[in-house]
Image 1 (cartoon, rainbow, N blue to C red):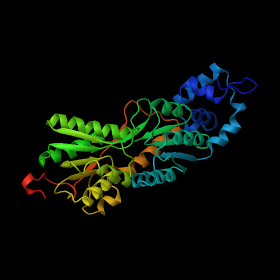
Image 2: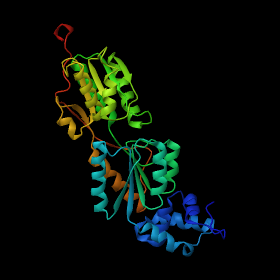
Image 3: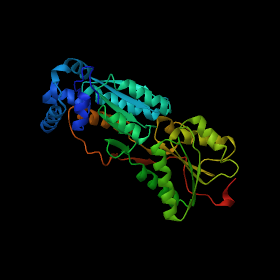
Image 4: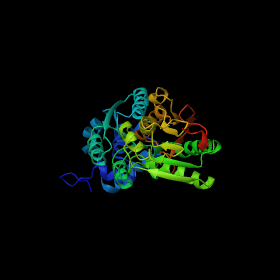
Length: 340
């Protein structure tokens, strides 16, 4: 139990008893109009059971909840996908009267854990994007502060994800219609939930069509690691590649073209994200466009709702639509006698 030195109950005791976040408990006593009536009653009942006195903590907790700060953690700010996500988060946060505090954990679960521990002491709510923590680690954080998870579906926590499976299925159907019978998936980080979902969707679509699938990786979601991945493909190039994200896909294209392999005449390449560079490279990259801006905006709106006492159904994630953008890096499979 989180007791004071005198043994008195704290808002953390009340939060545990009521099954809500400490900030919601504090807000229920300091700003009751911002908490749903049924939630306030739940908290008052829990406070009586644990012997909590609001007067003992109102001053310190009110100061904490008056910060009007929201935290957002991301895997790598140098990835343009996260730049768009953060931009959307900034727009929604400003509209709700909050400022945003950003933490880049640079693909390190240890750094992510320490950043979340630091942030939760100074912000009113958290948006956790592309987490590399375990499910248990995320649930532990969410017990102490209103939290929304992005690009990771986790039963019991409010989650927002792009429709990865639909995007992969659409790309796989296109490749099938173009005569491709084998696809190589270039994998991203091993701890990435999204990467696991994407590879599983490629594998399932291949099995349904009676095709073969290969996987290379894991790789970091960077241009440099895409180039490294291409070296695994040069000796026996596949006819089609789907990469974990656009940065990897662009690196794969550059590596293959540097080895004299034509895109898309010899190998079709498909990315995921639709970052600006996808439209600037030659050939332009075919990609599954994810709604990064709307992911950030939706996550902030959800965490603000939690802070204000709302209850969000968390057994299934909110799924945002994606779109396949067909450009020049992918095309019909060429017969062997038409290759180089």
